[in-house]
Amino acid sequence: MGRQWRLTLTAFLVLGLSATFCFSATNQPQANKKSTQLHSFGSSAVFPLQGNVYPLGYYSVSLSIGNPGKRFDLDIDTGSDLTWVQCDAPCTGCTKPREHLYKPKNNLVQCEDPLCSAFHLPASYPCNTPSDQCDYEVEYADQGSSLGVLVKDYFPLKFTNGSQLGPRLAFGCGYDQKHSGLSMPSTTGVLGLGSGQASIVSQLSRLGLTRNIVGHCLSGQGGGYLFFGNDLVPSSGVMWSPMSHNSLENHYSSGPAELVFNGKPTGVKSLNLVFDSGSSYTYFNSKAYEALVKLLRNDLKGKPLKDAPDDKSLPICWKGSKPFKSVRDVQNYFKPLALSFTNAKNVQLQISPEAYLIVSHHGNVCLGILNGSEVGLGSMNVIGDITLLDKVLIYDNENQRIGWGPANCNRLPNVDREYCEGVSRHFVASLGILEEHCPAFASDDQ
Image (cartoon, rainbow, N blue to C red):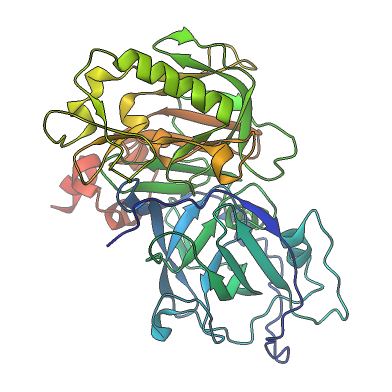
């Protein structure tokens, strides 16, 4: 049974610790030499996603690591930089059988490697000797954590231009995990997609393999897709807001924004927002949250909904005369919300009832916007998966902007005849979209 809700928000702390467990530093593979050949393959990579907001509470991607490759299911998390997998080193707190863990093979990242420093920014990492291992600890807002050592290994990837490469990338080999919540995660680790130098997409960008752009499209029906690079960025229909540069460090933040209720400004202003795919739900600071709840309750007066305090799925739930089957059953009772960005003209993030409500197993409708102040977020406002459903989100690190637009997350964007002609036939077929979205390919093969 999946988790009822998940609160892995953002990685606030990445510190090197002196670990008692050590790998042998002998026979370490040499770092990849820069190759001009690599830089001729610049393209994009796209991956199908699994998961949902409720009841699972996360979206995950299956990536192959090593040579030969071994697949690992990883939570996608734009709120942190570090990618890590559960590691047979041996492991404390691992949730997978030993045969499903990552096995290091004399492939440590050494302390002198620039990637070691990148993982620990803005703090400095002390090296007793250059050949020391590079330890890490990452702590999340939900009190979960991973402790381990950095390694490098091959990531076999297929790119939209048809090339298949296996760059060696740095990630965490986690041998001590702590979990929070009511049940253990079913994934093997976390894919850190933040804007820091140590994230996977930043490493790929420095190798010249993709542009430093991350995007995802989370389907309200479950699943969706993730992409690196700019090939799948829609050419129109995207609203852009500049990234904020503040104490939120490498998190994807933007703002300030004002909360809008049913098309009318609420007076709740100066909301700085963090976009975080590692959070199931959206979190407002206490002032914004209390104002929103008051607006909703006032608007629901006279409507056939009553409080359902016995439903613990989320803090606020309502019940009707009979169980609801989907949010569509109640969408007429709830008004649309929006976040209006004051630093960009006519830029709003529209939040329909489907983007802030769930229907629980009990058939009640529950508010998927929570009070962040109650879980230690202070004044921070986190835009989680529920609010990002059925939208393409683009984190453009090169132009320092965040974009979003409506999308069918059950299919790739821009996949028409023109797009198909520019994309490898093998790549399109491997995603299972050949006949539906590229009829010319299908007819050629007949």
